[in-house]
Structure formats: C-alpha cells, structure tokens
Image (tube, rainbow, N blue to C red; front, top):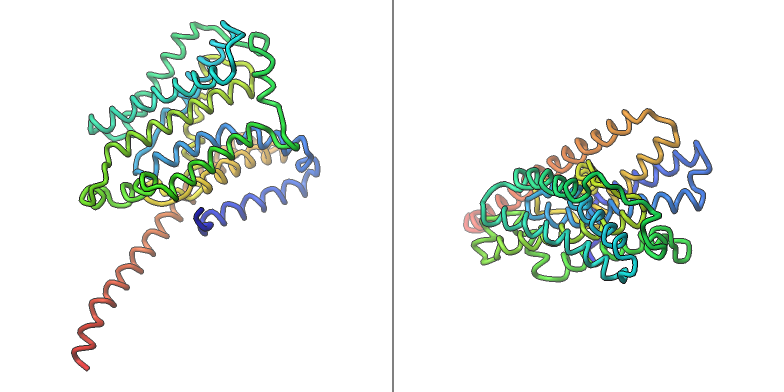
Length: 334
C-alpha cells in the first residue's frame, strides 16, 4: 500500500474538522444511528468513485456512471421482482454484468473511435438513461416487490458497521492493491502521465483504457445493486445527476483530473467528505443552495491546488535537470 499523500491528509483533516464543528453544534451528529446513516449514504458513492479513479488516472472521464447505476439498479430490482426465488449472488452478478456491458461499450467507442471520453460518455449518459426509461415504461419497483433478504442487505450490520460500507471498503482495498502492486495497474499512471512516452515504452494504452472503462462500468453496476438494496424503491431516474458528485469526490480526493496521479484511498475520502458535507449542512440547517455552492468551491479549490502542485513539481524537476547538466562543466573547469 502506498503512503498517504499530502492531499489525502488534507482531505482527512478537513473531514475531522467538519465532524468536530458539526458535533459541537449538534451532539446527536455523532450518535450511532447518525454515523451508520452517514456510512450507508457514502457506500454507493465510494464504489462509484473507485471506478471513476481508475478511468481518471488514464486521463479520461466517465460521465455515464449515474445512468449505468440506474440501469443496473432497475435491472436487478426487476429481476428479483419478477423471479423472487432468484439467488441473491446471481441477481448481483446480473446487475454487475449490465454495468460491465455499458463500460465495455464506452471503452470500445473511445479506444477504437478515437473520440474524447468526455464526448462519448456524455452521449452514453443519455443513451443508457433512455434505455432505462424504455425498460421501466413508467413502472416503479417498491420494497414490497423485493425479497426480504435482499432488502436486509441494505440495513444489515457487522459489529455495528453497515455491510454496504464493508463492501465499499473491500472494493477500495482491492482497487488500491491492484493499482499499487500489479503492472497493469501501475501502467495506468504511466498512460495518464505521459501517453506518448507510455506508447514508446510498449504499454498497450488502448487495451488498458478499455479495461479501465470495463472496471468502471462493472463497479457502477455493483453500485446499482447496492443502491437497490439500500433504498428498496427503484425507477428509471435512479442515480440521476450522481455522475457529477462522483467526479467531485475523485477530484476533491486528490486524483488529478489531468491523469497520472492520485489514489483510490483519496477518492474514497473525497466521497466520505462530500457525504459528510451534505449531512452536516443539513444538520446545521444551511440552505440547500449553499450545499451545492460548497461542493463547487471544493472542486475549484482541488483543481487549483492540483495545478499549483504540478507547476511546483515541474519547476523542481527543471532545476534538478539544470543542476545535473551543470555539474560536469564545473568538474572540467576545476
């Protein structure tokens, strides 16, 4: 596992400060039920942020994750509603498969079509949402239509910790290990840092980008399954607008929007911080408009900080290179 990055520590410090201020204003904020609700709300966003991190590291973006979540959530709920005896693991795999298909389509269009990911995923965002509306045909699946064991997944706890939060943590750890310890994961950083150099080094950039979108889609599919279990009521609008929160969580968590740096742990902290901000501002009875403004300000601050750090690192590298070139000349002169 990699060491904590200063930007991750900054997010963690902001999270601790926010919790302390909110708890000072309202002591019930730190009650067991409030913490469980906070972790449950952050679980779905964390899984989505883990997938988005993989994509952003390659200097791409996936704006379709909210629609993929909605399609997967409705598909899973519709399957369990129509066939209540379906084993839950099979239903979960079906939801993940829906997400994987969407991710594979995104990756293929971007890799083979040579079109920017922003354009492709903006288009598929509407395509997938349209498919969900066509599939649902105005229907809404309620908790009464779903089997009780599936709904229990959304509220169950282990040692007081929600199962959904444990699943999200397992996803983050698995992605972190892959990015840090496996060559295919580390190559994503090389592709995002310097695509031309990565190509000269023989890294199969196209295949890696397709894999990144496939994983992002699969995790969005898993998030759809968790969403259906968490809320119990699903229609074609599930997850609408969630893609912007996911991108915000990743950027606030220190993942460079221009690719090549950042960690999935930072993205998970970003998801937790954004969820905590929403809860805290509601507890403090702040106008919802200002909640959106705070999130927007956080994104701008994170991007500004990222550009500042990048410029300082580039300047330091230039000074180091200049010192290396000067050293032999000094040696010859002496």
